[in-house]
Image (tube, rainbow, N blue to C red; front, top):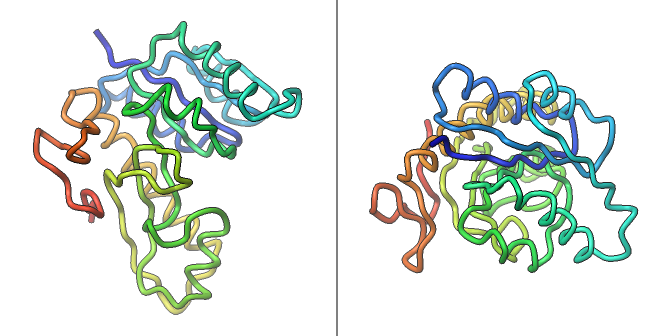
Length: 213
């Protein structure tokens, strides 16, 4: 039985597309059963519909609390019985209610080498700080913002000519390779979060996760 993915988005859905493509080519033994967006009319919803994937839009502005919105998401997601819930450019801070409900099967991708540059505007901040390396990180989600245990990172070298835009483009290319790889580990039941930390093939990963060079 295929590993079941639910993908949460807020925008154009380029990582979603990378996941869809990987499933279609057999690189990823999984099925995206639902795409949920907190914004209507975003490009990611069109990508999902073109691929024949169910979509749900829940506008967070129509809920009176973060918890009420997150409960509505849970109510929409759970009937699809996800094995992994994938945050792919989902621009909402999740409540402990949501994070605990999907503990151990909730993944996020972040455009920096965590723990550096949590939050927004990571490419500009990497340049301003004179970072020699930048990249992306995939981690299990916990209640600490961008602070869950690291699974994998893809580092790139920052060059003298880089701008926030060129860094963004290069990091995005890394993301599109790294997310399908990590999700395939999940699909093959090779990757788990335990009390000992993140395990790949039963062995603890280093603190910075697998380094995808």
